Length: 523
Ligand code: KIV
Ligand code: ZN
Image (cartoon, rainbow, N blue to C red):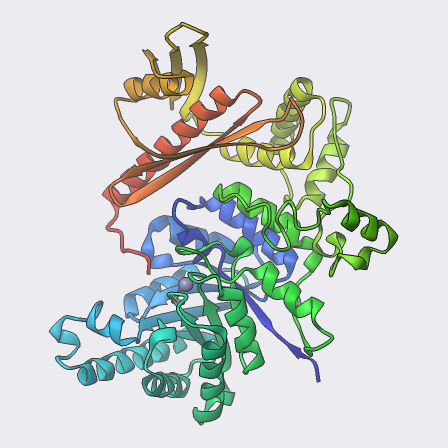
């Protein structure tokens, strides 16, 4: 009989742990709404105790989205209580608690003697912490998930012991994370098979897996786990996540769907929503999808070689194992222009997955849309996606570019003047630089009396043609943290200036938040 695989999406939690990919509350709610359309089974919305912004985001998502919402918590009462408070919304929720179980974690993270002096003592302490955490979470909800962090490198006998004990304590899902992406598919599958065979109470819980992609094996490991008894997959849109990322939702889901001929599994995912979701996540996080990425990359359905094009024209299946439509990639691009009215714009935005807009928001977007259509005549879906992000999110007057003038030319020293609005204050400065972008950045540094280390600077064209908008991503570093800013314009100098200002704004917000609250580090 066909069996359903539960799709647990952790884009908003592990995905957000991608370096520089932090999302604000509005973006998280928008993505969560899109994940609801995609019909994922569980959304892990964040790690509530880690910061007030995380708490608020989980609370907003739990209040606005009708999907089971999970919140992450270390195996500690405070984390679990805070997660519970954040999860009080309108629907079902899950508390996901975890603790490291590998010897490396026990001797590193739990090296202090209060966890025990020997490895044996430490194992006993951690086992108790895990069971206590599950039992405590159980006082708030029946739906409790437990993860032995770094299970991929955890001693198998100890892993079996922990899993049995947490199920006994009430865990209804046991998630086996390959936290460092270390295992090979056959090895990881065998671990799952051992759990199935050797944990006596295993049928009281769903086996889940959470695979990282350090060796590029996250999807392969997840599929191998399914073959061996896992029935929940934790994954993210576009595979974003800590370091090399997590198993990519679209790849796991489409592998299950495309290979139903040999596998009797299915998911509840509305695959036609995959492309929109991928675009939204990439737009909001600033994490560009590589063109050759499976399922959602720009080239995933492009047939370049003449022999392939000919084959596809005669019979699509010659070189296509799934249709672009099945994952929501349009075969033909819809173009709006200056003469497209509000209705046309609104209808297209809805098709692209943007939730209900207030009249005020629509007015603002329409105004921006008309200005853009005047500049570049043809407005593509990707232009609209950018417009949505910028118009809705860029509304505050915190480091807003008010005026920019740049002087450049052959044998001229590039000079820039910027005027920046900081709430109701205006600052203006000029500076020279090696090039126009450098001059703009120097002028901003002067105006804001700062100097940021530029870690990376990327420019790409959003759409095609001479009038295409350029997107600039600037990543700056301060201590342990990096901050990304994005700017989009038909003028890439302006886009660069906006991107740098946005990165500085993220850094400032982070510093302010850090000052106000004692932050805990995310796992
Ligand atoms: O990778 C990991 O181990 C995690 C856990 C918190 C599930 O993200
Ligand atoms: Zn993870």
